[in-house]
Image 1 (cartoon, rainbow, N blue to C red):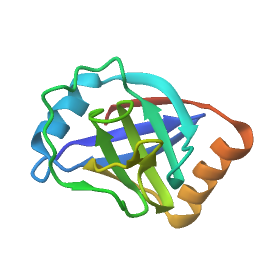
Image 2: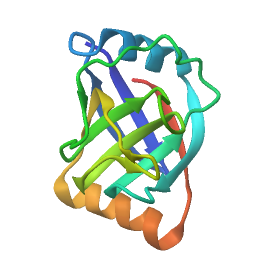
Image 3: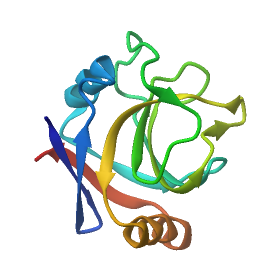
Length: 138
């Protein structure tokens, strides 16, 4: 089982990759690593954050283990069928949306963080804006 580290503004979180449930998405995520980017607050989806991954080649990633309503800590990979490619991290009640409407992202990993840690992460991006993030193998 593959584990990742998400380092946001000096704080480190671990995540378990769902290799059996979303194998193509897991391979695509692995190919992006290490990923240095920006973590932003979502605009449409509720209590969540996201990372733009438009530079990744995701055209061959099928829909797998996909959902519109991720649970707290779920990480979705969205290959960009109707909108920008992204990784979404659900921090609370979330309905994955864009100006194009509801989107179904591939549930590719689970962040190991408490409810309070996820709420603080989401609130930081809302209050303070974009946060530096590094995603790497653990």
